[in-house]
Length: 257
Image (cartoon, rainbow, N blue to C red; front, top):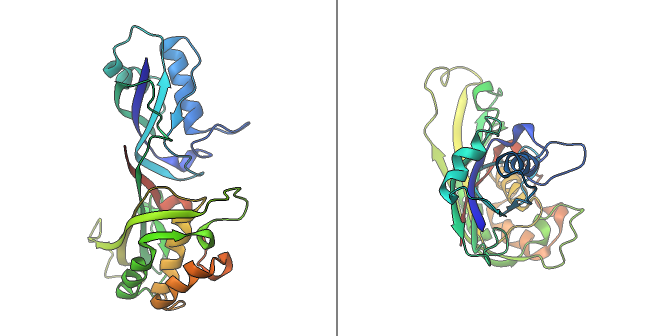
């Protein structure tokens, strides 16, 4: 039977999702857990290959099992063999034609960051730190340019072998959040703002979301006018877009089928 999993993990301690020789990965941890529970090796296919240091709130995955364990019980059984920074939130049986990666229709990523003169330890695991200035209104305007079907070649890191660089972005929005605490925000170097960039698309190129985030940062800092973002997309030149934002701020939020 084919089992679908919904997995949440903090990616700080891992080389990414995909198994890599000599490094610890989320996929390797799950496959070891499956072996411990079923007594058999099975490949756990994920809905996406998150990079080193990237997190997931609800990544979908599947594996094939020849087991008498009820599908819904795999959740707790696997968690008993996983480290505390990886958890299976749900498990169920799906059709044998289901594929966690190739059946996906939409994915949503969030990029969390805060603006402060000084880096803040309590946010360091899941938020990126950028220094002021940061103009929220200008950054919001930049987000509009990414929506639609475009060639996102300028927002793909070198080293990728993807030939088709056209993707559809259904939504790209930036929101300002309430500070997670009140103390210290009034101090010099204290918290100037906490933000979430949310992007939903039919697929993403290598480091695409992080490069979009880096471009939004530069618009907010006044280095790139918001109206120029559309020109950067059209030009397809990686050097014109912003820097790749740190991995720690990126989380795969959800996958839709």
